[in-house]
Length: 96
Image 1 (cartoon, rainbow, N blue to C red):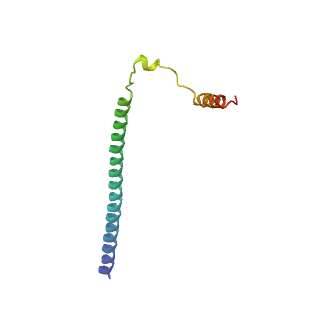
Image 2: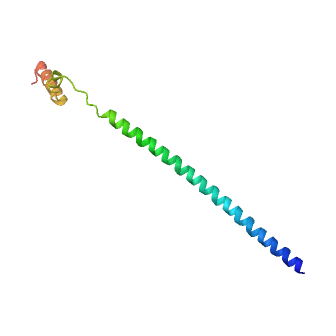
């Protein structure tokens, strides 16, 4: 009878240890996957930030034009141009 009680106690201890090892392994694997994903996200964020800062530095260059291009005549309003063209056509037809 004592041998059976000891055998049951040994089985209970083995089962508890096995369950703790299995839970620890699963939790450890989940933790490892989490840290790998976090590390990949950090590297990707750092590379994105670096490329963003580099591209911002390149875009700041302002192309200077010649003063003659800047001082050229102002653009004509397309509505005024069309109105003037219609008025001239009406005059040619004798209606204006």
